[in-house]
Structures are given as C-alpha cells and as structure tokens.
Image 1: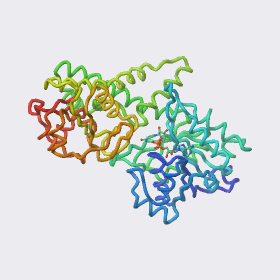
Image 2: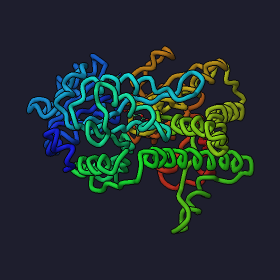
Image 3: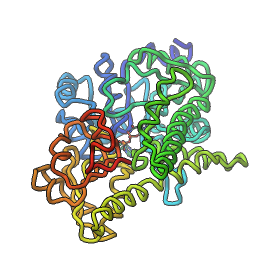
Length: 439
Ligand SMILES: NC(=O)c1ccc[n+]([C@@H]2O[C@H](COP(=O)([O-])OP(=O)(O)OC[C@H]3O[C@@H](n4cnc5c(N)ncnc54)[C@H](O)[C@@H]3O)[C@@H](O)[C@H]2O)c1
C-alpha cells in the first residue's frame, strides 16, 4: 500500500464502483461482488438500473439468479446517480466508445462520465479506464478532468490506470478470471494499485510500463483479428472463383502446429469492437503523419462482405431460374455472433436490407432476437412450412440451438455463410449437399 493511499486512509479496496453496466461493466460488477467486494454500479439508463436492482440481468453471461443473490445480500447496488461512488476506493469505467458520423472517435460519453466521477471521487482513489480507445486517452483526456475539483498530484490525490477489457460475450471457455488482464498505470504506484485490485478477481495480471502501451495492446488485438478476417474473406472470394473449398483450405493450414492461427470467412464483421476500434487507431495515427494501410484495407474488404453474401444468394436463386425480386428468403441468425442476441453492427442486418431493397420477401428466425423493429420484422418459428415456403434459406449466424437437420432436409436452397451445415451435420463433401451453397 502506497504512503499516499495510507495518508488518505485507504488500506485496501473494499468498495469498487463500476460506471457503465453493459456487456463489459455488468459481468465485471458481478465478478467483484462475488469475490466479496462491495460493488456500486452506475448507469444512466433508468430501465437498466431498475432491472438490476430487481435482480434481472439483461446480459447473458450474468444469470438473474446470481444477480438477485448479490442484490439481496447488498453486495451489489445499482444507481443512476454518481454520488454513491464517493464510497468507492476504486472506480472502473466501462462506458461506450463509439465512432461519430464521420467514423472518428467519439469520446463524449467517456468525458461526461469522467466529469461526474471527478465530482464524486474519494481522495486517493484509483480510477481505471477499461473502454477501448486510442493511445493517449487516459493521460490526455481522462487525467486532466480528474485533476479538477482540487486534486493536484497524481499518485497522491488520485490514481489512474488503463486496463483493456477482453470479455468475449457468450464464450464459455474463458471468463474474467481465466483471461489475463493487462494494466498500465500513469505512475508505477498507479499500476501497482490496479494490479493489486485486479489480482483479486483475475488469475494473471500483466503490467506494462504505461497506459499508452496498454491502450495500444488492445488495439493490436482487435486490428489483428480484423486484418486476419479480411485476409481469409478475400481468399474465400478467390477460392469460390477458382472452385476451391476455402474451409478445407483453412482446416488443412491449421494442421501446422506453429506459425499459423485459423480465421474463418463470413458475411462481414459485427459487434461493437472489431468494426469500430481499429478506426480509433487510424484516426490517432493521422496526428503522427501515418496512414494505417492494413486497417483501411481490412475495413474495405470486410465492409464488402455483406454485399458479396447478397450476391451469392442472388446467384443461388439464379441457378434455380428465380429472381431475387419476389423470392421468399428466410435468414437463420441475425445477431453478429452465435449463441448471443447482440445485434450491434451485425452484417445480417445489412444483408436483409440489401435483399429487401432488391425486392425479396424477407423473414428471419433467431431465438435470441425476437424482433427487428427497424426492419418491421419479428422472428418466425422454424416450422416445416416456413422452411419449405422459402426460395432460399440463408444461414447467417450459427446458433447452436437452431436445428439444421430439418432445414437441410426440406429447404429447396440454402446459402450457408458459416459452413454450419458441414460443421454440425458431419463432414459431407460439397457434392453430397446438392441444395447447399457454402460461402
Ligand atoms: N462488448 C464487448 O464484447 C467488449 C469487449 C471488450 C471491450 N469492449 C469495450 O468496452 C466498452 C463498453 O462496451 P460495452 O459493450 O459494455 O457497451 P454497452 O453499450 O453494452 O454498455 C455501456 C453502458 O454504459 C451506459 N451509459 C452510457 N452513457 C452513460 C453515462 N454517461 N453514464 C453512465 N452510464 C452510461 C449505457 O446505458 C450502457 O449500459 C467499449 O469501449 C467497448 O469498446 C467491449
């Protein structure tokens, strides 16, 4: 424990504040509360706060039963107000970091949140930014706001670090505890405090020398994914043109035990992270007279994928002498990844929009997404009638709970954008699956 913290009568963190209770903040709040810390969660959404205080979770990775237990035992409290943060020795920021209409970083939500935190921060407390952002945000944007309200000395009046969130919603293989946490403090003391805090809930904490390194490490991870997905998407288009099965190619390449990591093609990027975060870096790079070519190229390739997916549906219908206009299309899965209901930046929505624009009669089935109000659609039951009525079934997201056997047995045409049929129903060769077109 630093002398500075002792001076402020903070021996250890007993109460942790979490600001932003979404996909990132809520699981983090639940994890700290389960570890025995008192948790104060803040979110500006009245409906979310009300649901949480009633023990109702809206995030799949946090069960309502567990939440109810944490709320009724007062281990976790949730509020729309920032005042309760005055009790917290540490405040973790899990607020959204979107792009604005010009696809440039929009830190307005983080700035507004930090201003509130600054007005309610306990002397000597630790603040950690977890939101994904460009290198320099913690020191250049967050620190000056915390230095207001009479605080002068970082490492004394307050502490500040960046620790990127790595949660992968729906991933049952890795959770907060088993995923190493990277931490970079503005001072060594700040890093040490953040390390000590996270070590209470995470098996491994990896400390780097600065917040900038920690911020950049998160962007490297996401750019790495975006670039590699773009690479395999481009190869998928080429393989189709050359009559080569790209999925077989990736499976073959991944038998190499070193120097290769498999990525799979698909209808495009989705979620709040991979389509958005790299542009935080390319924006920042411009201030250093750099253009990040890999990011731009990968972005172009991935953004094109829903259009390519629609063209595959069009040509599948064409092979049946059917135009898109007037054809019934049943899409399976509209969320951006399997087994969750997250629609953010989902390429399925773009494909539905393109098909509807071209006159298709579109419908969808997704057990995790009951309705798409913006598209005027509700999820239909996956009945024999719906399958048979469709001129083409498009598998856009491979939810494990969707039974593909009746689909393969009854659909006149399937465009499988995820190689789901072969993955789930056994290793058929392409010839065995006459009614299935695979991306
Ligand atoms: N979702 C992921 O898988 C994931 C993974 C790693 C990192 N991240 C990063 O974590 C950050 C948060 O992402 P998320 O997916 O949890 O977002 P989210 O939209 O699910 O949650 C953000 C929450 O903040 C609340 N909020 C908005 N403005 C507020 C304000 N002024 N005060 C208080 N609350 C406010 C919203 O109501 C919402 O509940 C982002 O920077 C994101 O890039 C997300």
